[in-house]
Amino acid sequence: MKKQDLDWSNLGFNYRPTHKRFVSNWKDGAWDEGCLTENDTVTISESAGVLQYSQSCFEGLKAYTTVDGRIVTFRPDLNAERMYNTCIRLEMPPYPKDKWVEAVEKVVAANEDFVPPYGTGASLYIRPFMFGSAPVIGVKPSKEYQFRIFTTPVGSYFAGPIKPIYITVSDFDRAAPNGTGHVKAGLNYAMSLHPLMEAHRAGFDENMFLDSKTRTKVEETGGANFLFVTKDGTVVTPKSPSILPSITRRSLIYVAEHYLGLKVEEREVFFEEVPDFAECGLCGTAAVISPVGQLNDHGKTIVFGKGLEEPGPTILKLRETLTGIQMGEIEAPEGWIHEIKC
Ligand SMILES: *Cc1c(COP(=O)(O)O)cnc(C)c1O
Image 1 (tube, rainbow, N blue to C red):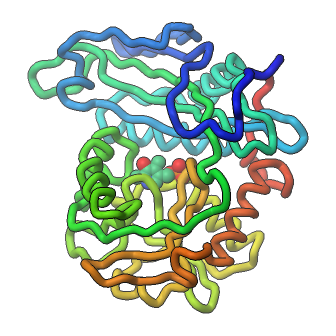
Image 2 (cartoon, helix red, strand yellow; image 1 turned 120 degrees about the vertical axis):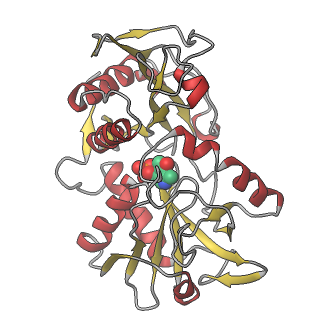
């Protein structure tokens, strides 16, 4: 199929509708067959569960073209599983995991000409999401739900060289100790917007959130997990029941251990240890891993390696190796690369 005529290398990260999206509705206790549709709008009651009590959740993954021209997604089974767990926590009906992956395949295949060519750094971002669609007024779960998957082409997160970012410790909390921090609920993002904008207004790119119970341990940012590297090259990532289990982070620590032969520790990370780390990065689907050069702690600056000048070597190596695996340039572990037959 002839590709869309887009400036693939300068797409940015914006919503741009593509041909088809997948829609399935849950009613009377069951999901319908689902179908692809050209309709990019949703019409629901003004009293829908999502509008009144924020019953919504989402996922995010990418389709892209490998070096040998295959269209693939990266570990979509893990996104299916995470959304399943999110739904259970939000009293929403989970969408069957195998059907979930099939639906992703269908949407990507239907928008094949929007999957950016290899080498552009761009990808087709896939956004599966679910929301309560039936009217509620008393506080209770909606009786009906809609599951949708749309796709939109996005540019490389880093246009040009990878520049380290400057983040700040936030005095806001991201997640309660026994709350919803570990699931991908829209509500986690709604309440992170104010801390994010406050950070931006103060000149920082992102927040570092601490555990809300003791405020002594590193959690994550609004949308990415932390990965640190010690001075002797050990990769350390925070472990906490209120962190969202990033698929990128889980993949990177596997790469660190099995491809780069590094020691990996997944454990509680105390904030007081942070100044001792040599490197710091943020992991998520959008950026893979984005280096943090500086961290502001209430007016005191913590500098990692060469600070804002250049990214640390281990983070760069991790990034290159994982992107190489994703692009089919380096052999992938079994099951990581999921080919889409168009
Ligand atoms: C989605 C998300 C991440 C990143 O997860 P990936 O699976 O790597 O994309 C990290 N933190 C939060 C809070 C998230 O919502």
